[in-house]
Figure (cartoon, rainbow, N blue to C red):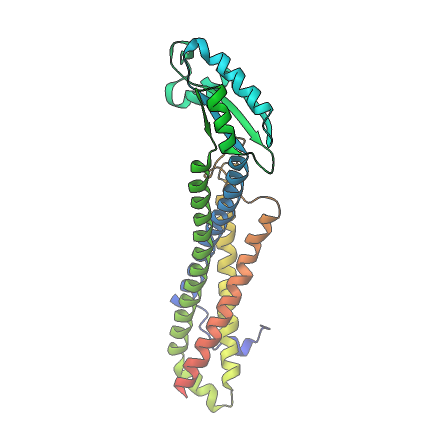
Length: 290
């Protein structure tokens, strides 16, 4: 990769191949930053959903108004005696109103509506015997229905896991596309300089000397373009809202902690892809021109 003024004159310093290489590497690096953010955010989301929903369950108390409080107290007594239950508490009217507010507005009259009472359960690491708890609730609080959140957890975690896989597959495809575009640009530059290559051979230049000139120039162009694209991608990521307490997928695309180091690896990795692609293209074209 050391500079050689004589060898650099073999590669055209301007033309469409220069702009093609710079634009392609910048665009691919920009897309790589977003694909990387997507993969990492999906992984965090799958872990968070899995951890939070795996240890949380809910009991719904559907009973006449005069019996709801008594059955809630009975359910709480059963939960206090159930192994594997870390804590259990009945949600207040304000908490239930806050849960329903996004759908029904802030002035929902819970007192006049048949809204079931909710009991939040936090499990211990080993969990509890769900079937045994259901049988005890059926006997002591007939209006209580246990919801383990399993049917909600599995599709969400699976979807987040597939999004993570999609992000990493996208990064691989972007790398392959970068290599293909650099190869096309190198082929075009080599073909355009066929006469110059023939003259260099006549004066004693080896194919390795000629190939190194193209490899160095195209690798540096890719490195510069990828650095510009990565910088633009990081700026775009920084403009995304940060994840808060209620943040979800779209508000959690920023990198976190040491993950901010990963985008810095995109330009050198793009340069390595360009180096390999250009070297193979140069050797193949030089053999054809021999």
